[in-house]
Amino acid sequence: MTNCPECDAEITIPEDAVDDEIVTCAECGASFELAKISDGFELKPAQTVGEDWGQ
Image (cartoon, rainbow, N blue to C red; front, side, top):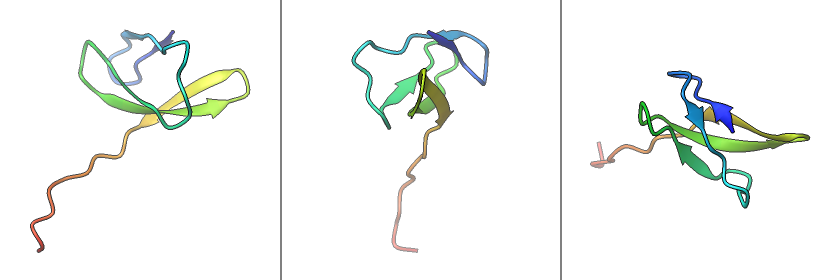
């Protein structure tokens, strides 16, 4: 378990989590990408892909 960088709520990381998996904070809805480190995972802001209308 770790804390959300946005709102400090607890985020549960699944036991079977993998590198680059996306987790979402239940409190504020922020999405984070899991980055594997030696003793677990760290959270980094997930890349958001917006609509591309060819402009």
